[in-house]
Image (cartoon, rainbow, N blue to C red; front, top):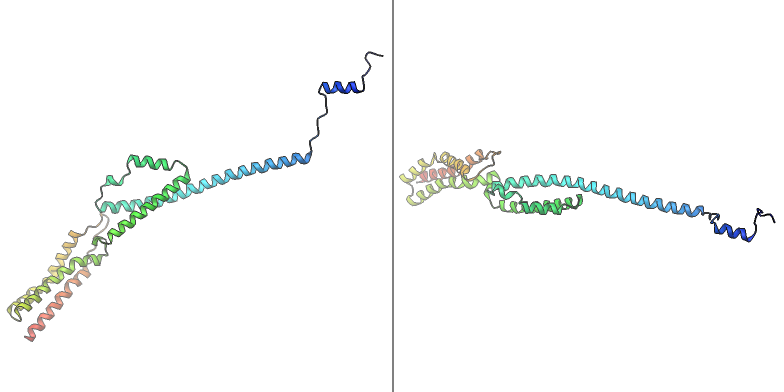
Length: 239
């Protein structure tokens, strides 16, 4: 046999297997396509989740900016009212521990900042409600006419009451005539006294002018005086 003859049969097959020269197994196209679709869907889900998270953060940041504007406006108005009530300015500034706690509560991103701002807005609104409840019992916060009536009214009633007391005590006579004459200029005096009293009792903010309701004050001072004068005249004429 020729030494270079080709060896065939089982021996050749065993030699091919020993050298690893085997034909690779074919991959099913449908399986590869299914795996590709699954990977694509997974990547799309990741992309959508990232986009949703980014959009949520953007919305939270925008809402936090709007909330911050509202809170700042409310706090500025509240600080002004508290200063009018005599609260020291240093008491309206947060302390370092409070700043540290606030920074810690907002370290979780825009959503945490938004939650903290909403909580702060709730506290500010509760404080506003408490201030409003207190102001209802303070004449300085009443409407101008109701507030000024507390000053004009007692002054306007003082002289007529004295005239009525004189008439009741002495009857029709010289004392009643003197009370009538003395009471004629009293409305002007009473109005001036009320004007000064309003300025002393009630204070306006530096940017506002104290409303003394001049016409209303004149009316309040005149009506009791006119009624008392008419009553004294009728008593004198009847006597």
